[in-house]
Image 1 (cartoon, rainbow, N blue to C red):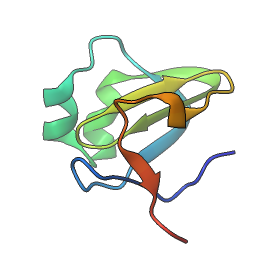
Image 2 (cartoon, rainbow, N blue to C red; image 1 turned 180 degrees about the vertical axis):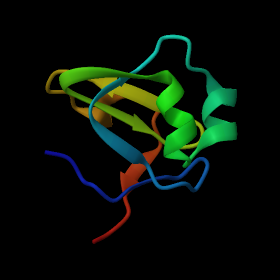
Image 3 (tube, one colour; image 1 turned 180 degrees about the horizontal axis):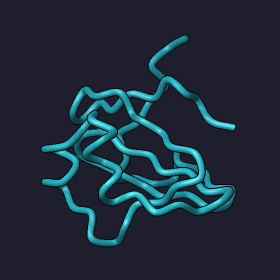
Image 4 (cartoon, helix red, strand yellow; image 1 turned 120 degrees about the vertical axis):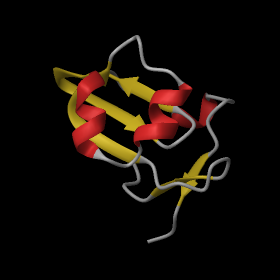
Length: 83
């Protein structure tokens, strides 16, 4: 389980999450910078994968398909946005 209210302290955007998807390897910073949070635009680089989850803010993104501690990823600046 993960917090569904994550917020990025680097770009001050809410972190979006998409169940059963991963990000295409061609994704880059400019793609997210220009397309967040427009789901219709993001779909262009989303790949369906059962059991996975795609996360993204405006400056960072991750695809997770197994239990992962996101706190160990030093590059991510995601914190709970408080419920």
